[in-house]
Length: 346
Ligand code: ADE
Image 1 (spheres, rainbow, N blue to C red):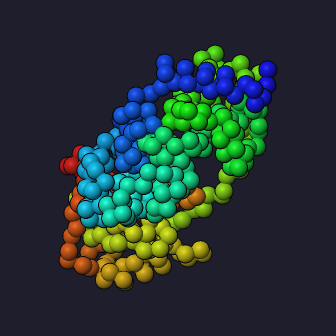
Image 2 (cartoon, rainbow, N blue to C red):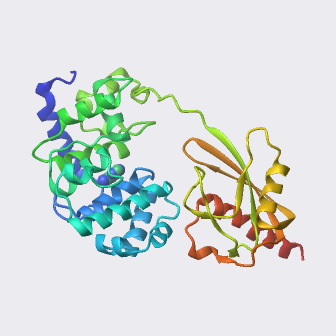
Image 3 (spheres, rainbow, N blue to C red):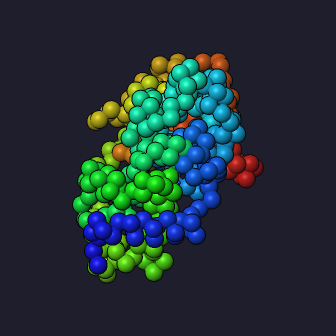
């Protein structure tokens, strides 16, 4: 059997029945189907764009604990928002959440896809998710899970974004868009997994071309990855693992966040020269080398060599109060590890 337009009602019914039995209870899924709290849905969808659900739940509870309502978020200083976002990556998303919360408080909560789409940082995915899950609008979401489920169902190895959206729109149950979208997401996350899909448990297996092929996990074909660029940098830890000189980063490497004073090692430049540049900028004498930390971002591998120094600015900032990237936390952990080994030696 292959999927034809006449199958769509049966596929929808099978999916929705499965969702009724096996859908996940998640902290943002409170309230009636298609009538959830739009603020919770919105925050969860922004978080889940870069985080798996297990970790996303923890971040969600933390963020909602800090800002339980859109009014609380809008009223908070941006530094507090970035602090609550710590570890979630892509700080531009936190800045946009904060900006959009301000718009919502001034102009009212949008209730349609187009209204959400007009807010800062709200793309087609988030607008479709909030419109369907919180307002019951018939909009199909299209993310990585949806892409995989539909590619397999139709036996498509190279699905384009347009293809996925068109298939999702065609399959969407217009009477139950919220449950339908969550059903496809959950199926992709728990049954139609990237590796070793659990086809025997799948409600839409009778229609699935990839399952019939005997090699379901080969659909869709892996996307060609953009090359990962290596960025090397030097940093100075002036202070200790708890209080240190922090600067606001500029440029493309974690720009906008606070972090240890850092200089990027230019293409072909020697590390000593970048370190000299950094030390001169701060008026510091370098006293030691704590080691290197690495951090993988979407298209970048950062190698940061962390040094200690004497002199320079007298101020010390409390590490716990600042919104720091994971890279800086790793750098500060080097100092704490060094203290631990000094005590162990003593
Ligand atoms: N991934 C992205 N959005 C999700 C949602 N609403 N529920 C579960 N997983 C998701």
